[in-house]
Length: 97
Image (cartoon, rainbow, N blue to C red; front, side, top):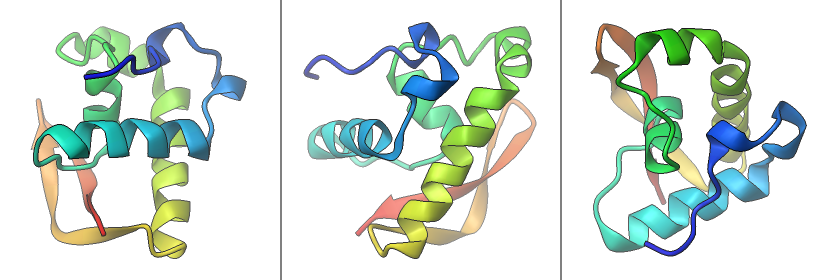
């Protein structure tokens, strides 16, 4: 994969819709990709297997979740009927249209 921004190193203000869409498109071009806030974080190098890190970065997860909702409203992604479950965390999942 080409250079994907490391969301772990970015501040909350640096995470925006364009950056998230770039990550989604980059990963989706290589393989089938279920879009969730945690899958985006994981694809960018965030240690999502470490639940403490995930819980300590809820603001980033919430911001990505809101960006995904905005992308859904714009018709760029569509929400799946079922939720994804990762380590006991259930999330809305999306597909790239």
